[in-house]
Image: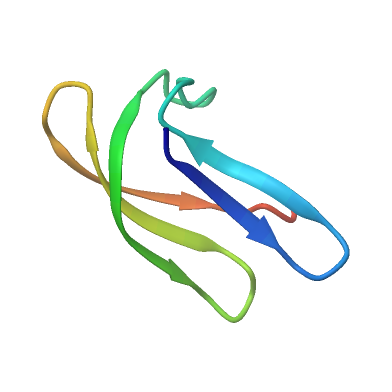
Length: 63
C-alpha cells in the first residue's frame, strides 16, 4: 500500500493512495515514483495507473 500524504505541521491529508480510485477521474494509481511539492502547496506525482499507462497528476491538498 502506498500513500501520498501532505503534512504542514498542524494538519495532514492523504492526497492519494493505491487502494482507492481518484474521485475526479475514476482512475486507480498503482505505483507512485516521482513526487514533487510546489511552493504553493500543490503536489505533482508521476505514477503508473491500472492500465499500465504513465500518468502525471496534480493534487491541491489545501482546497
